[in-house]
Length: 491
Image (cartoon, rainbow, N blue to C red; front, side):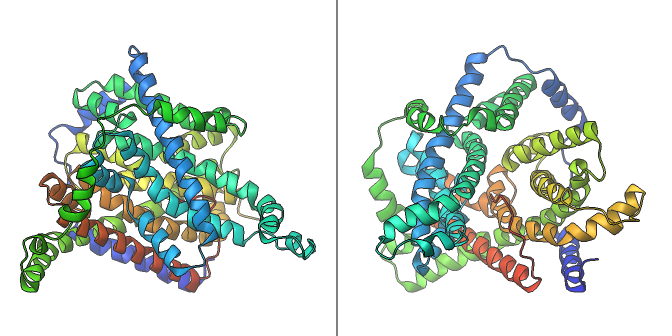
């Protein structure tokens, strides 16, 4: 069974989530949610492919933004990984990856507008921070033996290229492939802020009540992700990278003067722009903290902790769906398909759909976050459980086998994966505020709509610091509980 510190920690998180439930709004406020859900399900099972040009354009733009954004992020991240030993580089990487792609998009929209550069940079910048961290860890874990047997006269660059890279290459390639899948999801949701990707067409179809069009778009997106290994081959990636920039579309010419004004005037706190003193600046900051930042932080933490525990509970129910100890060939295939759909659907997209069906509350966000992240963790834990050999005389009943044989042996990795997702869940929680849930993203979006960019930037920085704090706490908990199972994928 799991050790007592692990049990106490788990119960502590459950208790915190139970307290958060007191402060959470989880009501369903729409008049007839089940009727709308029925209409949506009918649209999904009877998709309308009568507009192949529109569907093709949506997918092509989604793929193009993903390849260019992830490609630039990977290149920048590799350079950063070589410098990751420097504290300033680690701090920069932590900061840029703590800000969600949609927040970056909202920033760049203010001076680039709906230009392809907005979408590309919104993906590339946070991904560079993620790649920098993960690539550094992969290179550090490379086998040092080949470097030791090389002659001493071999230069540093040659030693790196011929000794470290070959050993780390399979892991670098595997992780980059995974990030491309994440990039496709990120690219899709950029459509919700106006970029011409899948989310733009989904939002339009949903707003018009064309659920059959929604079903068609979702279906082709799932197929695109599921078939990733078939159409993304190593020899084809250079061709995709060369072609992708030509399919990003066009936008209005960039007004560089607006970019200069944004950084030199718009994001400067208003009291400073007006030449007022420190007292006025303090009052401005205090008003922002009391009326927006603190309520946003509170809602973000409440939603995060409820979604975290819901993710954990759903993951423990989900992993047997693909575990050979509980499923057969057919049921395992069905379970795998279900988890693929769950982890492929972006949280933002699922939350948007549920908000339209159930009305504005935290419930759609909790369900969206739990379903997506449980799909990821359930898949990872299910694979881990398949490596377990049942002991002789193990419980024969499935329930006993689950509770006494399999679960105790995968609980440590499960908790490690859950802690890895904690910061990611908080990052997504903040951005879901754009949909109307009063997390930090709600106040960021409101400030931007009111052209109060100085307030928006302060709130975005607070969001990043909150994410960094949660990530630090999660690392310390993993270390204290000795949870050293590193996940094969992060987001």
